[in-house]
Image 1 (cartoon, rainbow, N blue to C red):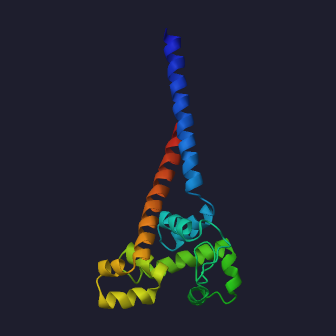
Image 2 (image 1 turned 90 degrees about the vertical axis):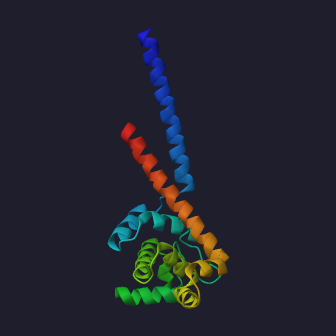
Length: 186
């Protein structure tokens, strides 16, 4: 009788472990961790939340390092070449050329640096993401005329962008928590 209970309990445990592994695997497909080492390195260096960066890359390019937007934004973090030139100047990168924005490590470094730059200028993560998406000048002009809430209402596409990034950021946090739980069970 004790052996039956033991085997039954082991079977349930293994079944739960398999289900848990499938769930974690599904999260990894829906929420990729491609370039995680670079993201973690520069997020730490520039004091930016790595989950925010993961979600932003997912939203901006879907982790396609060759992405180019209709407006000309390039790479994983969809950086405009003029913004990249500004960042290169700030970082003292004299060898910068716009083609380098397709290099994942450089694109991630520049994108995270730019987020850090925006965090130093704006009050909230929402404002930082608004500036990242619509432009720093657009946000400054709008804030000089309206509250941030009114600005968001005037820019519905940016409002949707912010909501998507927040949802994905939470999912990345959950995904990492589930992975940690699974590793502790193994």
